Amino acid sequence: MKIAINEFTHAEVVQVDCAGNKTYKVIEDRVVLMNVGPHTFSNDLLSLVDIYQQLFEVNKCLRKTKVRSTYKMLMEERNRLNVEIQCRIDAANR
Image 1: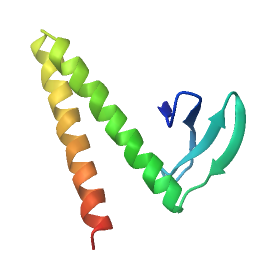
Image 2 (image 1 turned 90 degrees about the vertical axis):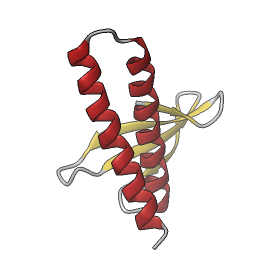
Image 3 (image 1 turned 135 degrees about the vertical axis):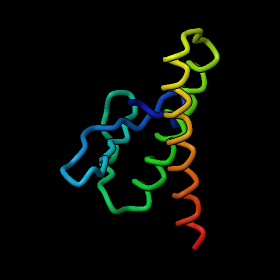
């Protein structure tokens, strides 16, 4: 998934390691500017933005769907993402 930083720069999710930590590459005009590894502040920020992006896409699909089973599945995913976002915010505020 690509996360837009501005119109020329984006962060891209590269891989998930065995522990479930995502790593990112910050890319501008197809040139890698920076690798963001796990257990860094930048990684925490980009992963939170990544979750917000997923939540945005789920909400967009929720507005369009008319199939009940799909709606229920998307509602569960939306609730899971909201809980994860709130847990991260609460952990950061401690």
